[in-house]
Length: 230
Length: 274
Image (cartoon, rainbow over all chains, first blue to last red; front, side, top):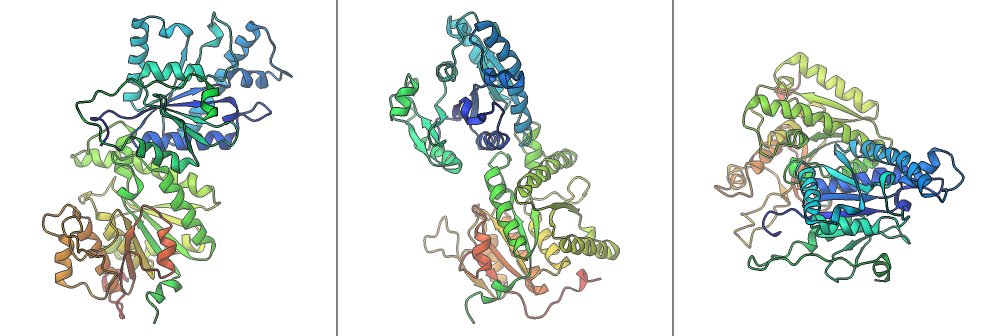
């Protein structure tokens, strides 16, 4: 039995190569597969939050640029173009499975003050309670900090902490397989395929938790290096 | 004769899949299940088998679509949900069958197809034509306009009627039970699956209704009644667990899975042949 009626909350971190080909275009097959897997997880009762990257790459392709220009302002412009492309693609793909998605663009200060954290958490709680999958990205076009092409793992961690997620799901760069990041210093659980992903997640949370024990806040490994070293 | 030998030579099969096998609790579709089902049925069809699918799940899908968490009680609301959900359901089926280049067709029926000769003949002709065109008809009750009760388990009877309509030689009913048990498996450790049933006796019917046992939930009763219709019509019927649609392959190979209700030798379906 899961802890009292609380639904398992999962942050899914999508890196650029998960969805986007070398030519800078979204791979429709991969996007469709992702939409199916996540819609199904949602249908099975889990709460899903997607943290996605790829806006700048998509923007660059859309404008037919040979490479990503180094200046921050250029990158911000590309991010603005590409984000529209990205969210449209997500909407179209998830729509095939009857799943509504929402776009959430965050700035780096959402975790700066307790009030902001609470506000952010409330927004996510509301979306998730309406059975909507939020697709999160950095609000690069208006960011005052440097634009990091870091594939959003730090953002995924931040969102996971703010929203009180139970696990993070990632896709390995090497073999493209899924991995479950359980947090609390536990090692990443590699997952062979999509069907196993569902089963593994269910198995993780199927143990009865004594009602007297308050679950400790989940802490995730700090860097991708730590993840991939496991 | 080898055990279930005759199941290996079937030409026209009706497969009925229940809500519990298609959806998660809460009514939302299990896409992996549909994907597997589409894969299995497409392969069978490609190998020359004529396949018809009787599906459930529309009301649950409709409820989920509009964010309803409780099962509606009013008839009009149920009918509205069925309208919403059926559209969604057929769209999903199309998508997964398309992966295998298999075209599907939606056929919504009401009980009139049994009682009114012209509707009966028309339905038989349409379904035959669809099969000839190598399509897989996906059939459901037209809950949206049906004034009969929209009952849980009703599609078991519908699937038996469809099997008779198209003169199928096998009906497979997939749900969340492994088959017909000799006793309630939840309370009696000695309960076993009955592998073959030659005749549905009153004792067997009583067994299936299992006074007060939640394992039947009314579901087993309608399955037995569907199996009875099949036996009388000379159609074999197998009840099995649908959590892995690949079980269909095993059934068609004559493997010992689920409960086989052996077709009667003589066909006696006077009210279905017009």
